Amino acid sequence: MKNLTDQQKGSLLAFVAVMFITPDSLFIRLSSVDTWGLVFYRGIIPFFVVFFGMILIYRLDFFKILMTSGIHGIIYIITFSITNITFVVSIENTNVANTLVMIATAPMLSAILGAIFLKEPPDKKTLISIIITFLSVIYIFFDSLKLGNFYGDILGFITAIGLAVGAVTIRSAKSKNLVPAAVVGKLLVATFALLFVENFALINQDLIIVPLMCILCVAIPFVLVTIAPRFIPAAEVNLFFLLETIIGPIWVWLVIREQPSVETLFGGVVIIITIAIHSFLKLRNA
Figure 1 (cartoon, one colour):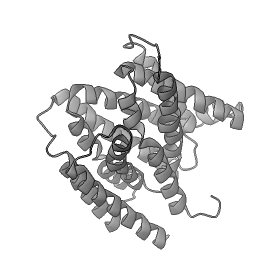
Figure 2 (spheres, rainbow, N blue to C red):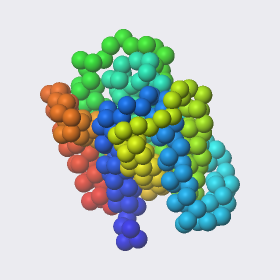
Figure 3 (cartoon, helix red, strand yellow):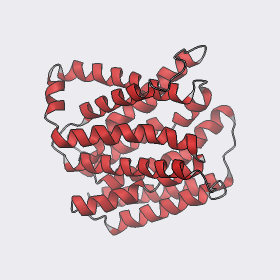
């Protein structure tokens, strides 16, 4: 990593993070745990895994790093926690397609916030990529979009805002390690979910699926995505996460044979090609 440019480091971290996230939809489909039970485990298991990992690496300096993160750490704890919760509640209160389309605005929101607060307006390549990928997401889910519950739609948009604010916050604190703040955020998510969980039991295949999902699809990615914006603009980080729109359904198709729609395949190919070209051009310039 030391020999890589910042653009290479950030792109690699964001890409690896989204690759770990892509089987998330499959694990959720295979799990029989109720929604708030999943939110609880997706908070508490990553909390312990990353917390103990950081204690092994930093020992008591973990708490020093947390305390010195200052206002950036506080903002990130809040946005990280809210985003994890609003995503789930949004899906519960509106169509999944509505939520995903709302979240697809995150790169655009990141670009706007980055331009306002960090004086980092997106270059033409990034702006074009954001527009193309956003239109591709709308194309994929157009037939599924409905007049959903306004409350759920708003929470989906709040999730997108949270993703954008979180990425811009990390970008504005390049010299600070905000992973400890994200760890605290996961603990807050689990604590909030406790208010709604009715059954904590993990039985049969859930004993394997839930811990595996929480480590591979939650713990590892949230560490990587908390580091990535230190090296590349927030809009570029969130742009990578649109890859899940196509790769997630492919995992589901491969394992449980749920056929993705033609729109998903076509729109997904456009997203992959756009992000690949964008990354190639940015890396070449770097």
